[in-house]
Image 1 (tube, rainbow, N blue to C red):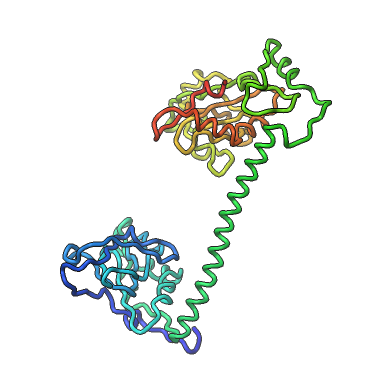
Image 2 (cartoon, rainbow, N blue to C red; image 1 turned 135 degrees about the horizontal axis):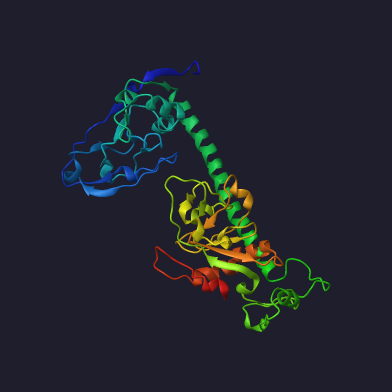
Length: 383
């Protein structure tokens, strides 16, 4: 510590858990643990109550007091605050808060001290109780020695802390704004791509109608004017089914509790942050292997679309067999649809198309089922 600082026990700087004496009919602020924010903000909220309803069985506090959660994990999550704005300068709340009333010190400096990793580490050394109901030892609020800088320096330190915190908040908000911008730009790129405006049109390219008729000699072209936007003359609108060798929902598997040989691809394997992982996959009962046709074994280039579940339906990823690792193959469950194109079709283009805002909105508009279990039927992929 600096030479002009001293080390003193907490009890020298605060009154511990003071009591209030006010008239029974006075309105006060009531604060359960849920009304104290965790982290560094120090924010809290309150409910208006009549004093006589809460004066017994709860802790008491007033504006300017510090409240610190003593129960785990609230203590480690930095649930602590300086009470302010309380009606009639009085409050009551959960007994899982320890109340410290400052004595001629700058409370905000000590709120930040109580949120420091050093203080949290000191508190967690002396947990008492069973796991899930552990509380810090009372000594952390009384006997523990903490630094005491001069009062003016306490205030200067808080000013400096809040200056840096404000800068960090700006950086965090900038990061959020950047992520939003990145998402918008990616969406715009996909939009340009599916409209035929991302790259120049080459008159030497094979017309799309020839590609489609090579895949299926009986293919009948559609009138481009029937569809939602114009495409280049060399392009043709077609149904997804015209491009696919396999287009189907997966099947309902019978799972194995013990055998970990054959993973089943479920919605959660299509990661929210992007990509694919089999880490959370369940496994197929080996005795049911013969019930799965080989076409259900996922292949590199398969476009996988979550077909059920509010918040996950429409999530689209491109499968690559490299994610199999040690597993021989993986099959999809009934909540995932497989879009497998013919070899002549670039599956990455279909993946980009399925990921575009146009198709994601189409999926959203054609969902069926209840609010909690939205579903996209396979026929909508075929249209």
